[in-house]
Image (cartoon, rainbow, N blue to C red; front, side):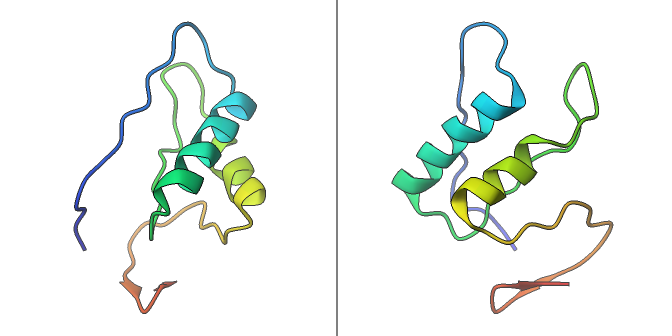
Length: 77
């Protein structure tokens, strides 16, 4: 698996997980990516909220922890 490109979204000041999820939802709507990968850990906490909220807003399936796996035909093991 590889990536054709990545997108860096910058914001001024602190962005809470809910606002971050809404921003990323807007980016996903515009870009229509086949796969979205987010980190679990932030610089100051380990809340794992943004990815779950993004999945709910975008009506996407989400895997919240994957130690090893593969993506095949849009399924994740």
